[in-house]
Length: 218
Image 1: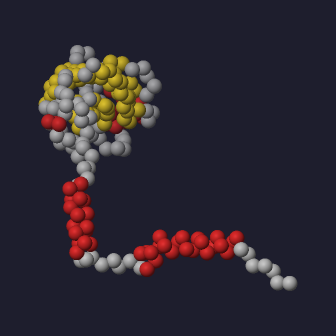
Image 2: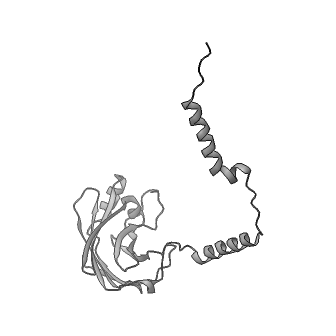
Image 3: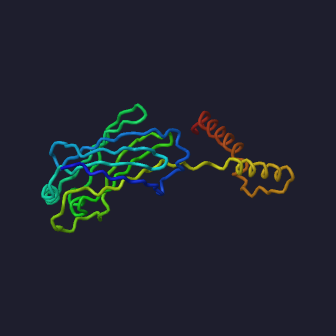
């Protein structure tokens, strides 16, 4: 079966996305795809050519290499569909393995979503596969042509929360000025205020009592 090129230009807006302009690198890359049903050996599925991570420009060429009955039998046997992605990017080679239930892929008629995960440096650190179908298999579907209908998404790592240092420093300074002016009242209890003096005295009394026990009466 001939390869079926699918050209997709995708700009993805997800909850876990940082600005594409923040990526330090935007070199092109090639992702070789292989797949397997259950425990069968991996076969070539195709490849994804990533032209630009910032713009989300990708081109995917792929071929199922399995008959629709293969997906049906794997789904009925409650087996998994495995996707292996061999990534060449920025002079680095990595292999990622991802899986989904074969019945979900079968019932979606080979409609799947491949997500390329990118860190803030512009490096690909993961590839995952999923289906737009529900998380539970419902039953059989009519016979269909085993051609993938794939959507490629690019998910960008987001920056972690940044503490508001300026606000904290301003608050500390305000409290310091208020204490110097006597505008704040210390509402702590007596023990809370002077515990550092009380504790040593208690320890001294306890130690002196232990070292000088009372002599028994005769």
